[in-house]
Image 1 (cartoon, one colour):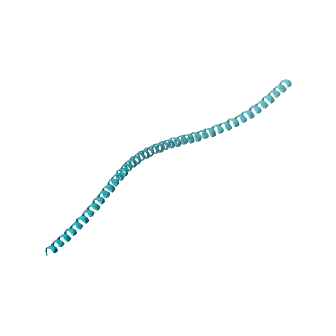
Image 2 (cartoon, rainbow, N blue to C red):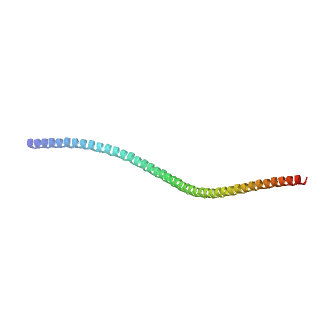
Image 3 (spheres, rainbow, N blue to C red):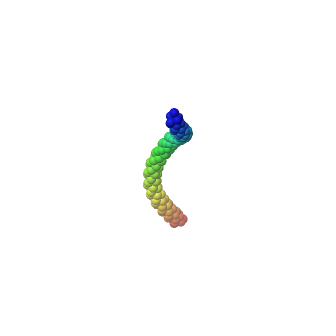
Length: 150
């Protein structure tokens, strides 16, 4: 009976030792589970924050893309306007050159007319001088004839 009691005590001590080890293991595993749960919760919060940041960045990118598209359209419109203005300026320059050419032609015609007018005036003045000389000669001849008659 003593052997039995001794064996049972030994078994009880082994079982108690196992129980303590199991209890310690359970406590340790509970702590690991608690740590892992906290890590999982922290990771989920980080994931939520990163997801929110990604969504914000995506919205900013879309907004920037829309703004870029608007700027591109405005630039295209401005470039088209500049091209049209350049064409208008070229057309106006052509018109101005044509008008200047016509002006130069009319100026040359006017200069020719002035030259012809001056020639006519010169010829007229010479004719007037000739008529005046003839009138003077005729008056002198008439005066001489009148004196001869006297």
